[in-house]
Every structure is written in structure tokens, then in C-alpha cells.
Length: 134
Image 1: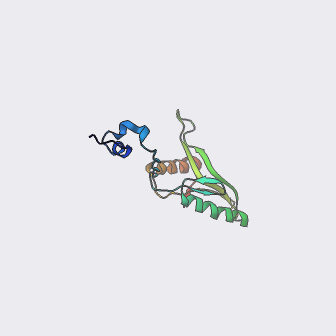
Image 2: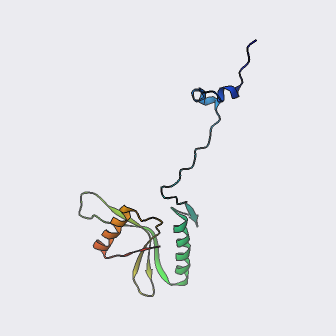
Image 3: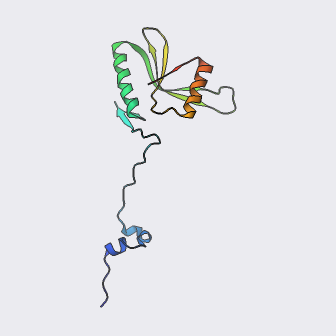
């Protein structure tokens, strides 16, 4: 007498991949970011890292206290204005320091990449802006 096959026999067999309709769908694994940062949300705003979200909370308090003004996120700077291709640096935060009146450009970095270092140098050369790294 032949043994009857059950669904578990098929799912555990080497040819289970050929019968995908029989295998329960699995949730895809969440992909880890390149440098290990975890996304965060504050006030309905998505941030690329928890460090950036924490800094936003600090800046928001400084804004309410009147220490800073004109707070903006994800501000773009063109670093190759006369070139054949566009090279853009996106600052995490830009604001005005009310005690000095100076514009501050901030970037929340956990890891200084080669590309970032190049853009930081170009920001200094083109706009005479030193990026504050938090």
C-alpha cells in the first residue's frame, strides 16, 4: 500500500520552490541601511536616522525659545553650477542663529563618507560655508 503525501511533505521537499502556490507567503526581511541607521518619525516628519530626529527636536525647542530662526530641513545647494552635470548637497538643517545673525548649515552624520567630505570642501569653496557636523 502506498503512503499518501501530505502538504508538509511537499513543502519540506527539495522541489518545494517549484510549488510556490503551496508555500505560505513570508514577509520580506527588512533591509538594513548601509551604515546601520534606523529611520524615525517626529511630528509626522520622516527622518533618515534617529540622530537626525533627535536633533530636530532640539532645534524645534531652540526655535520656540527664540534662540534660532528660519529653521528649514533638507535644503539643497548646487555645487556644480557651471558644469555639465548637477552636483547637489542636501543639508539636514539650515537656520539663523539669532545671537550672531549668521546662517548655520548642519548635517547629522554618524559616518563621514568620501562623497560627503568632497561636498563639504565644495561648500566651503563655493559658498564660504562651514558645515556644522552634529
